Length: 270
Image 1 (cartoon, rainbow, N blue to C red):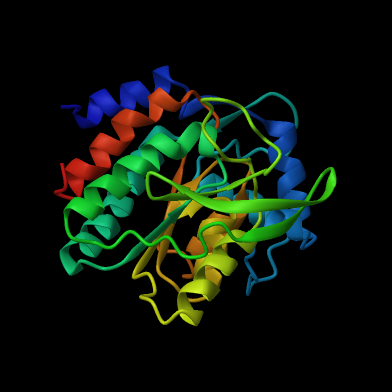
Image 2: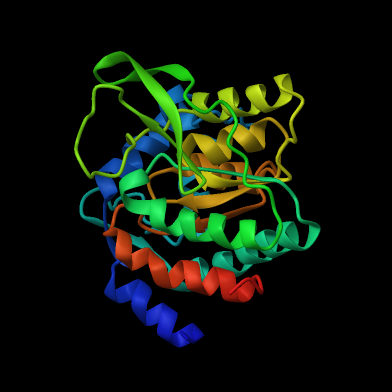
């Protein structure tokens, strides 16, 4: 079983934290987009504060540990592993509370090829603890704006985790799911749950549009976010999102397994 120091060492070795692969150029571009209220960076969040570029950078320094110097404009980004560990514990507390309440949960990801295993482990453990893992709007078609234009995707559930899939993607044996930042999937899922009179989630777990979209609609939401995605951290700062874990969300899938084990242990679900 990993100790605090052991997990910290893993974060650094896997480049989940410390010096990460996320580029500073991309982070600053997304901070500017968020300050300009570009929907591609808002991820479904409707921020209350002004949040100009300097304020966004200052927030990301506090919450994530990125380089504070605005003159640092090129090179690798940084994430403070101690902030990651502290946020993981808050994340685990919320998961544990949901388990103790046997609350219905909705789990979704815009990073299925990286984070499906992490979320799937949480779904399995919460289901075993008596929580209903919701699957509303299974098979529903959703039109999502991508860099290639408007594309139709299908909402599906894999191991209890919601993903969107391009219906033309027929890769044999591959994990289904497309990378997306859109809040539309969680909005569709929550609307379908309400329309059918089924239970609404007591906790939503996810990333990108899943966590921001759910939090904006008033649902308790926790999630993961990279250094170039300020929206979840703004949502956390404004009290819309309960917990956000800063980490690189694009490393190889097996590197997230120790994090899942840590969360389940801290949530008393291991």
